[in-house]
Length: 440
Ligand code: ADP
Ligand code: ASP
Ligand code: MG
Image 1 (spheres, protein in one colour):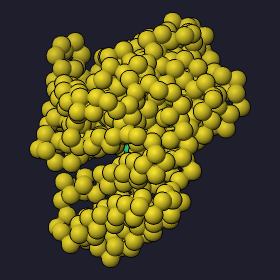
Image 2 (spheres, rainbow, N blue to C red):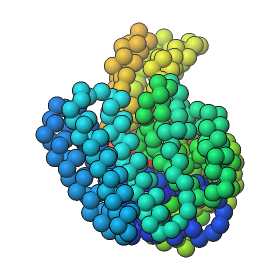
Image 3 (cartoon, rainbow, N blue to C red):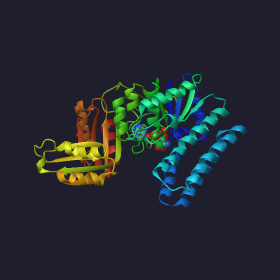
Image 4 (tube, rainbow, N blue to C red):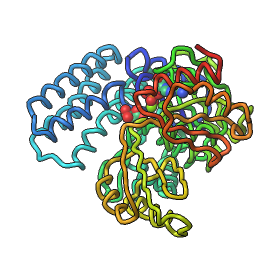
């Protein structure tokens, strides 16, 4: 059995859904198809939630009406038979009635999660109707019945395995299953999600749970590129990556993959393929345990980074100092991305300002604390690159004009990370594209 995940652009137009239906029926291997919301929908739902949270219900009403009109147009192009047209209209009406009712209820974070879930619920129900319209036998599996996270927002992999297994068992004679990416239930049983871009994570978790032959991530580009195509003109697809390399690239900002989407596939040894819905014959990127080749493979960048510097002369020879500092971040469940130390100071970076104030307060007793915001981590990833001496020389030669704030080297054999001001991000990615890949 295999998993095929299609992102927002891949289902964003009626003709794209038609293309997806062709891709999922090309072979007879049983499959679970994971769908995102139509492109633009989750952003629209985020805005609706923000309007309601801000007390501007009239604005929310207008935003809901605009989205509703988009779906009316969408179903006109999607289904042809009278019976399915009526069903599609009923589906859209049901979900937009729900959003309208929400306008009248007092806002809460839990309610916001319900709003955000509408996109995937709509896309899968409409796709299922399209398949029905086309006479393609399938089963719609509700992700809210098997996908769950615990009190720390971590997926409950054993429970997912059991519940999904039970659902599949009920439809033993079927070959094609459709389900929602992104959405799940939390420890309180409420509707929740796997964070933005989370459909990749859903796909990988499902692939791990069913021990799939492959987890295919179908998107709007022909695989992982060597640099961010939104920032740099000339980029090229990478044929093969190891799980480690892919995980580093995803974690350090390559938007094509959700940051956490690699570990489930890696842990359960399911190969991942990144493929292009618009260009299905393109090779794409294969991600397995093998790196395929050594040397620099790709560069990724992660924004919104905060650097915290703690200076203390008492640190000199003081064992236990770092532990005490790390404990503060642990207490607030805030991961540290980069760290550099000297005898009298330590600098760390974090990517979330949620508990920044409390963290700073608790760090104060350890020394002088300074905070700098608006940084970007640029990661250079490739198998064994830290053992390739010319990488470092080329790297620093290329980046002479860039004010580098921190360097992390040697923590992983596959990654060198630099902290630079966000303002220098595009310049850095372009200089590295030339310096490391010879691409301008
Ligand atoms: P989907 O909606 O299918 O999940 P995303 O928009 O989340 O698609 O991810 C695909 C996009 O990721 C591409 O269109 C591309 O602009 C962006 N991207 C950023 N970095 C990379 C990279 N290194 N390789 C390929 N795509 C990248
Ligand atoms: N629809 C969700 C989002 O836009 C999840 C996803 O597309 O992966 O973030
Ligand atoms: Mg995505």
